[in-house]
Length: 240
Image 1: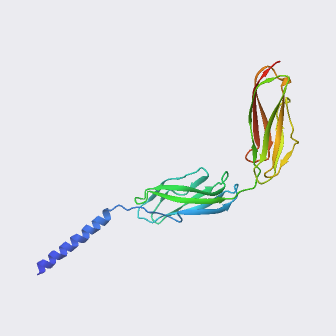
Image 2 (image 1 turned 30 degrees about the horizontal axis):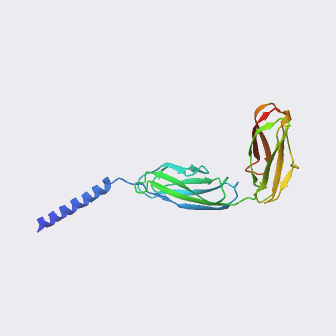
């Protein structure tokens, strides 16, 4: 009876030691958790840069290493704190959103790669609403003109429609060109939203040499996205 009890005790002791050995030999793994896996910056103006800090925590037993962080767009810049995070340790990741050039609802993402064996890659979804700022918007019905063969004794007329497709006043501030050109625009020309103007540019060919020519006219405006619009004119002067 005593021998049997001793045998059972021995088997139990070996089992316990074996379990302890297995437990000790198992590598300690890191585990990455995020304070948020998505963030909405709200409504912002196009020139309003916004940011948010995400808390990265290691809830595992091994050291967590952040291998890389990157965003899906150059409009989101990232500033990473400590990349090696001990168990129960934390680090900060700041995501800075520059909305310039965007309008309306915009979504981007941030990818975090680490040595977390269960989730080696985690994603943070970033969203923002970029407000529309009222501005003028110039549109020309035609910007390139091929006059073909023209006589040096004739005056060439270039006609095109200038439109304001924006929601504030469009101002044609100046027209920059050579003396051989003139126009019918009373500068500064102001067009209200939706208004159009039949514009004419006149080319005095009598001052030009015979042969092929290429000319350009610059139209200066207060359109923030098109402050300078070009008219390009080509043709051939034939003396008659």
